[in-house]
Length: 177
Image (cartoon, rainbow, N blue to C red; front, side):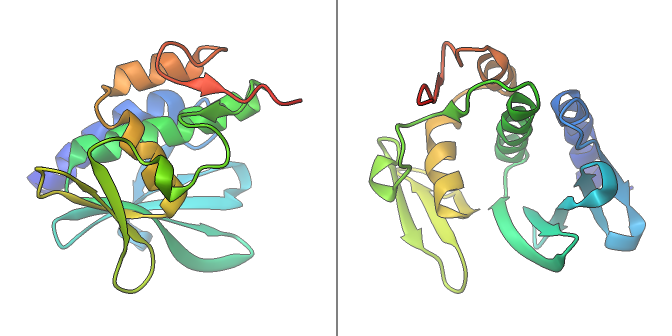
């Protein structure tokens, strides 16, 4: 395992603290050349790969094996934050807690955090840009809007707030019934 892969494996081990309880434990699968986070029965599969010095998260359903881009970044820290939120959100659903929100519903491009902008990417997906940074994150529109609001938090802060029944102190919850 090269150094980059060893760093990703260490990050996956940390993310597994929330992914495993959410029924999505991750491990490296040589047949996919990827870290695979799949739920029981592998109905939903999330693939994490290193592609051209970027971490690329895709997912596919068992009924449709075509992989779709979820999130991509050159930053290991970004990916750890994204995966932590992603699996905490799933864990909240399993625990029947209210849906976690970073902005009010509906999540739209105009709700991107201050200092960030989103543009349509070449091909599929969108790009998230932060003023003064050269890092470009790519992915789905709603995921990028949400990410722009928690990128400044640590994975521990994301986990603590996301697993708090009220989403406090960094998030809020959907109170609609």
